[in-house]
Length: 316
Image (tube, rainbow, N blue to C red):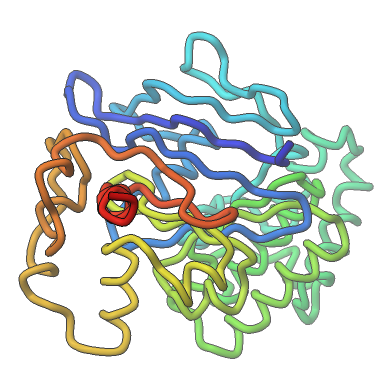
């Protein structure tokens, strides 16, 4: 049993027949980092917001389960997720906008501890300063008394990480945690996340569009496109033997000029079949149907009819 199991997650705009996320499946294991990768608009952040029950107004969860240690967190009415900061926390992509501009950062961390850990105000204040020091912020006492606008982007990101880690969550969701930060700060934040996994044995869902960050940080990876899982498996498997045409396209785009016949088309959420089908150079008639995830190697799954066709030809 996985620490976090997401199965059949489907999300859409109210009153629209089309799904933004369609039957999204992935797992996060204790003590491991699962990467969620894909181009902008692929559904990475939307998946995280659906798991956290933070979907914006007008977006609804239509189906799917979210289980933590086997416990289903999604209420039967599918409108709420039963979780707290001890279960899951999230580092948001834009830390300055995620922090309350009217509250000192130490107080914001302290409030999370008061609400989720039943701490008194003095104990929470002390723990908040300790957490700021833990994430490598110099002069933690001074920073705790500062407002977000008085801090740099990298410092705000560390404050967000301190707040996320304060309650020692079972699952940490990190949504593009190093966006717009220089490489030195990026490396330090990566180290903080790795240290958390080693210290607490938590699981991490690491969201990024950066394949280099996936290779450096993650044990497993799930590739999304158009709100649909294209491929999932061990990082080494997916990087050295990618089996879905979209995953291959992502790697090709890193090392050579992308094929314009593949690149210059937007996501079509109205497609009933594979969401990559209208861009895929290998598409054939079967791709008009929705492809289920199927195992192509031990622990390596892909949602592509091409492999089923190849297997059928090979056995003929």
